[in-house]
View 1 (tube, rainbow, N blue to C red):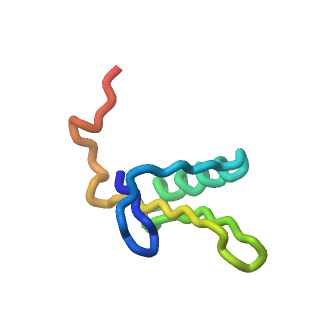
View 2 (cartoon, one colour):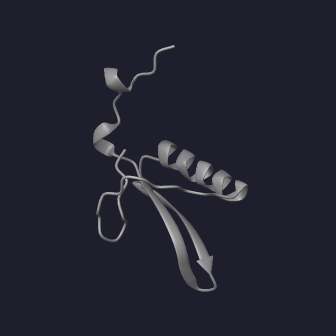
Length: 76
């Protein structure tokens, strides 16, 4: 996982994302589409205030890291 400022590309260390239930459900649906549609590279969750973008969350699937590696496997 790499968390960056969208415009500058600068890495961010700590992020707190607060979503309403509706926004969380919308993000979940978008992430589901990202995982099932190979043509999608990223999805965005956008909050508008009037005709202006107030905030936006962009999630991009890292195509180079799609195959699981032993360090990423969960063991139960």
